[in-house]
Length: 97
Image (cartoon, rainbow, N blue to C red; front, side):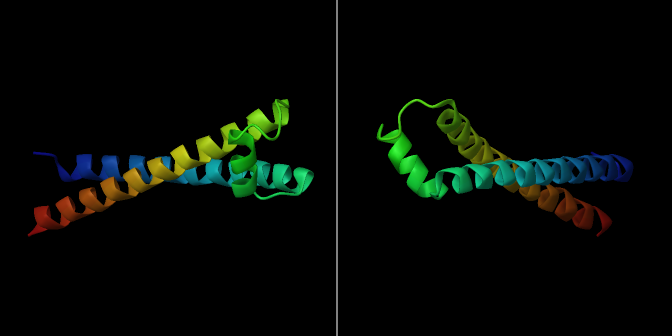
């Protein structure tokens, strides 16, 4: 069984990781917005054109594509951490009963 102190450490660690991921998402979104402005297209349009081979092999396009894939992964990780936090909090509540 996990102690209340362990619960607190786990919860604080998850919250810290969540904050770091949210900060990373902010940075990635700003970089993506720069590409959207530079090439006058939104990311959905870019992905469609890039993945169909319409845009060529410019380094910017590979960077933009990588940022979009990375953003998706960061968002998935945030969902997982929020689910874990919810689980830890429910375990704490059950522990108190």
